[in-house]
Image (cartoon, rainbow, N blue to C red; front, top):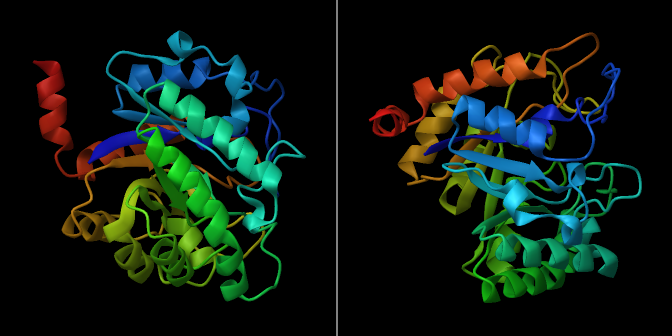
Length: 295
């Protein structure tokens, strides 16, 4: 496994505030450089850049996104700022498909082998039966996956607070393409009523990427989800999650991701750094990779 960061961890720094959060005084511009610099300083293996915090894909410069020794990829589908698509909008929007196609193309042009995507979000979910939503998503997801396959890109579909694990597994089975997998978010499992460990075990064989969160105790269905902590400082069974993934043969990136932080001042940079330290102490093979880098 590799130690990584997803740039959603810096969402307040970019000016996005979730329910109950305190805004920062001077948000960063929508560029990757601050996150890239922090990832390089921490010497992590992988960095996933949320596309909502980047310029439009045709304005991106590949050279500015590259850092030696750092695997970089994109996370597409977060509905911020206002007016962005909620991923594939539950299969309702041809415009969402077109936007995803643009990011698939630029991911391939930049040499990325995986792209995180979402089917929707809690806000776009509605109250229709999951079977109706899955049925409508099969075509859009299959078209996106086929486009990506022709360019050598895998798509990692996140459990994004919109679908339970069983629904995602049905969608993967019906799309039936080898380059479609899962981006596993452990806290989003409990937001939709899944058990965190059982959901991890169900999705682990298909997992290409992990967005790992820890959180304080409380109602996981509250708007915005549970309040996040540094990894190892909350109540999530993180070590059991890592063990479950390892048993399933997962060997991809495990990325720190901070979602809701609650009110008051927070130092995201320090929380991320403590979380990276926890990952280095608990993710299999990290110590060997660190030793190899230092020699």
